Every structure is written in structure tokens, then in C-alpha cells.
Image (cartoon, rainbow, N blue to C red; front, side, top):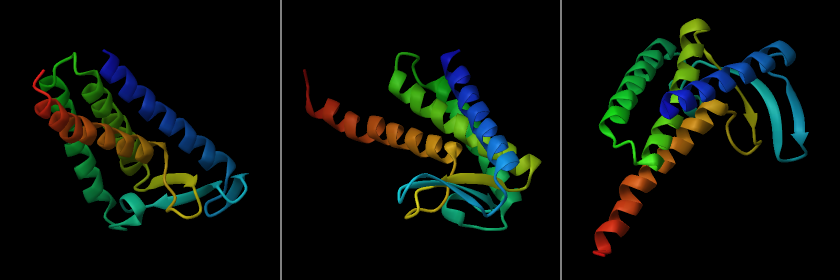
Length: 151
């Protein structure tokens, strides 16, 4: 239950933030939160992360649906006691669903987090990346250290 609750919470928070940005900040406009560090910038992204594959939103929606299905499958194949893996998978699912909702309902994704030296992104993107980092660490780094320590 924790897995789906966390994924739903991430997708819901992502959609709420996107709604607030859409209602309060015109497209292309910015609002500075921390000078020279972070702005809110309202951007419509029809591509993937970092605006790659612009104009491929229908295909990216299909990819998002496949990713969500694979993550749910992996969740059911992963032992419940593997909390870090379950947490990482929930982050990926929540972020994927947040952006998938945008692609299906708007045909673009609303991005708003602007660290000035980095392309504009959103909470869903942040969640997906954090989940992938957790999964990679658990599957590659931790697994290697567990294999090297026979105790």
C-alpha cells in the first residue's frame, strides 16, 4: 500500500504544482525565488527531459505508459522488505504518471523549476531521476559491496 500511496502522492503534488504555475504565471515568464540560483519559469515542453524529442508527445505518452506498467511489474517482483528498491520504484512511477497525465490531457508537459544553468524541469522529472539514482545505487553499487563482503 505504501508503494501506491507514495506514487499517487508524487503525481498529485506534481499536478498541483503544475496547476498553480499554469494559473499564476504566464507561459515564458519567470519569478525569482533565490537570486542567481532558482526561478519559477512556466514552460510548455512537448519533448522529453531537457526538451529532447520535441514534438513527439504522443510517442512519449506511449513510452510513459510502458514505463509505468514495467515499474508496477517490477514492484510486484521485488520483495516487500527491499524498501529502498520499492521507494525508488514508487518515485519513478509517481513521476511517470505525473508527466503522463500532462501528455494525455494537454499534449505537453508543464515545466517550472529553473536553476538557470540547467534546463527547466518539474517535480515529476525530479522524482523520476531520484528514483533511477536510488535504483542504480541499490542494484549496482550496493549489490557489488554485498558480493564483496561474504559475512
